[in-house]
Image (tube, rainbow, N blue to C red):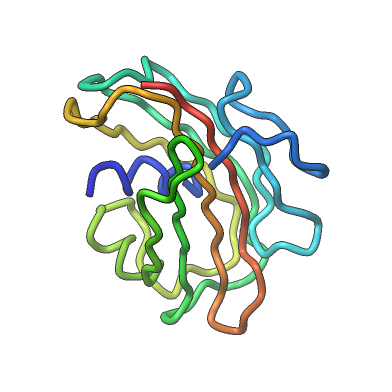
Length: 152
């Protein structure tokens, strides 16, 4: 589940040519959120290599404009060669607790500046991966949408 952690931390999918997405982190991450989202991502920075078996440091800066409560969900969809490999829905509050990210629910509206280290598993098969990560609050309001494209 370290693989999930990588993408969750990025808030935590496909570096898409989707309209409205803003390229970040050297083009690996696209912020596909909008000004109605509860979390406004200001910057995502990746430090280290995005290679199998390496350690990656992710720095995330933004503004959470509304409280995230129990029942908020994150959907992580990972594709390779157009085939869905992972399609997971998880409670954000559970993930924050499990991954020891430094926040517990409810997460109050606030400025967010978080750095988190992630070990990328060495067993990920080589290839290009497209991932879409979307957070939805318990009131069905979108928190964020991020796309990531990476090659291992």
